[in-house]
Image 1 (cartoon, rainbow, N blue to C red):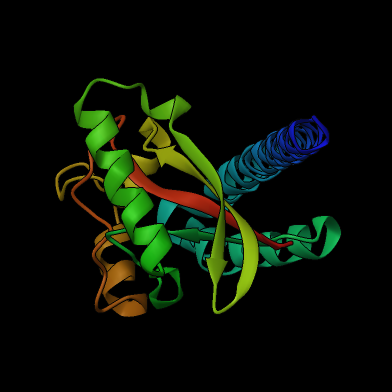
Image 2 (cartoon, rainbow, N blue to C red):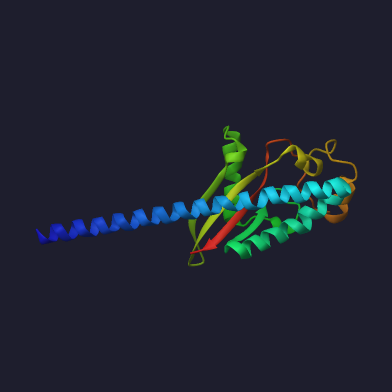
Length: 191
């Protein structure tokens, strides 16, 4: 009888711990989902302002300089490591790590299966080199505005192709059409 009671207490404790882990993971997912909401609208606002001032070719500096700066500032503010990555990167610093690559490839499968690109994201607890992290990614689908610098050659805005050749001789980030996954915002937090 005592042994049975002890087993039931251990099972109950295990279920409580598992429930707590799920609750913690749900909290982390909710927190992570707030990151793109803080960054993307501000980035689009800054980008549109620069397009209005300098044209599309001049606005490349927003994605080249200001977006990484915004990610760095938001990282410091929120306690997450935040950056943008892509399978077809423009910036050499935007190359995905193994988890990000696998997640981006999964995003492409989900898109091909009919999922709306605006809703594609993923969050999970992972272990890397003996340390646990919460990892999150949110797909960044191309919008009409994006195609001026990331579209097919005939869709690129005047002067953009030349500026891209100058700044990014190894650019892979062109040829997109609307609602494709251009890349993702990725966030990582040590646990």
